[in-house]
Image 1: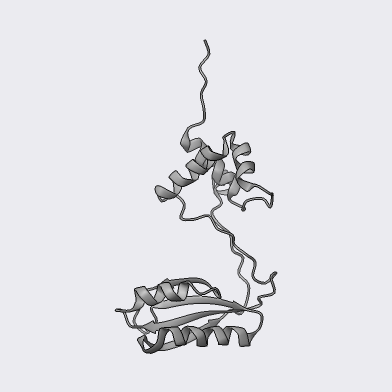
Image 2: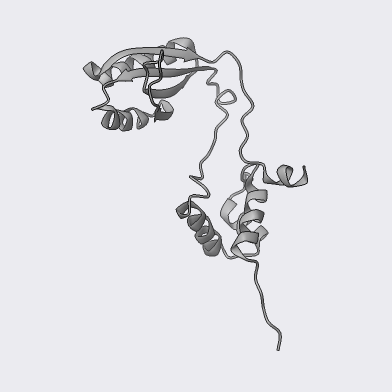
Amino acid sequence: MSVCTSPSDEQLTHRLVELTEAGLPLVDDPWAWLAGELGLEVDETLALLQRLQTDGAIRRIAAVPNHYRLGYRHNGMTVWDVDDAEIERLGALIGAQAFVSHCYRRPRREGWRYNLFAMVHGRDASDIEAYRNQIRALLGTACRADEMLVSTRILKKTGLRVAAQRSA
């Protein structure tokens, strides 16, 4: 009688990272593709992803659009000096705005008073200034000051690259 063995979670995790480190392919069902590559059923693949997220190995799975290719050529990191007593509530409100791609709280530093950051993208400079004004209105009197840091060049963004690290 033969024994049927399957890859360990560790082996599957390494393979999953290798398969997805450059992103999922643009196919009708990326989960089915991933499951096929891993030799698993789709529900097993999704369960593995859920375990990795629960364990903190991955934070999220999300689309990362190329804003420039979508016509959004102007970017601004808006920074806000928000009353600490209101930041949790207001940060969630700002982060929920459709025009904010990411929003987060940061500690104040000596010489840097801003504790709330929100990235906005627009088709032109007037778009991002309008978004800044909308954020300012939402923050109201809890906001003491703000600035906008405007992108001057595109930085190459990449995620974790395990395969390259192993071969180095």
